[in-house]
Length: 316
Image 1 (tube, rainbow, N blue to C red):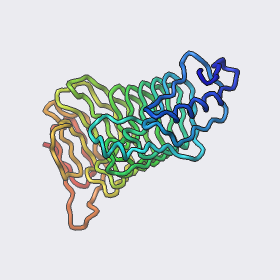
Image 2: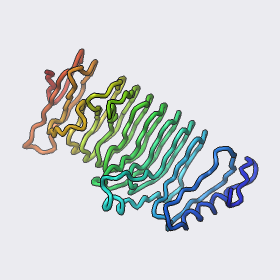
Image 3: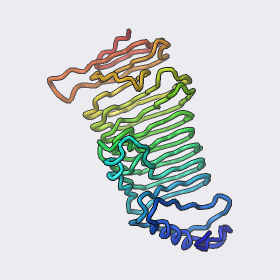
Image 4: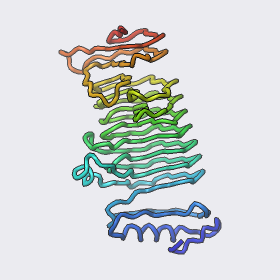
């Protein structure tokens, strides 16, 4: 509003928002552009360009319904290498955050080198992300492609996600999440969780991952929970998955946070309470090194169904 926006829903506020962006970019200290939630802004074609002097520019979009973002060339570069080098253990900013945004559409967006996660989706109902291209080094710490929490009816499709952490992390309070036709390169694969940290109660359900490729990832399909937590992760399906040089292909880890290195390509390590109704079928995984064998481990599976699998899975 300081730059002349009226927010009446009929006046073109594009120039005011563009000028506010440039003002933020000119700051010497970390800066945030705030667009008030109690106004209606008419925006036509809007280009938000850098470079910025501000050392930390995060894009936060809160409480906006029916928003469509369709990028036309260009890239959001988080310049994360300065953060990775000086602060590997501190909490680093997310490049693009959507909070309580319903009916969201984001298309043809390219991002790289986020200090932390690239895209955060929190408290949203109904979102479509398509043709998203994320490119960060495989050793960049905690650079998740998508962090999803407390959200439902989220679709991520037709995208390439090269990261240093989870390609997609689906956290507590999330349901009806669909990921399809994705290339996950480097990083840690697609993960449910982690759930139940600090003995919390968390739930995830109705997740469908289909026709996705994991290339050079540490993990493929993964569910991870902390000991002492409660809740459930249920109605989760991974199908039509292609693995190429993935180390740990299929994992259920109910001891997350406890260092248990494993070379097992299928590792279903459930707590004494058990994992229920797990189905494994039409799985064929061999080592990319001809001299090496692949192994499976399975513990505390209750009422599970094991069909055709290579390697063979035998539960304790």
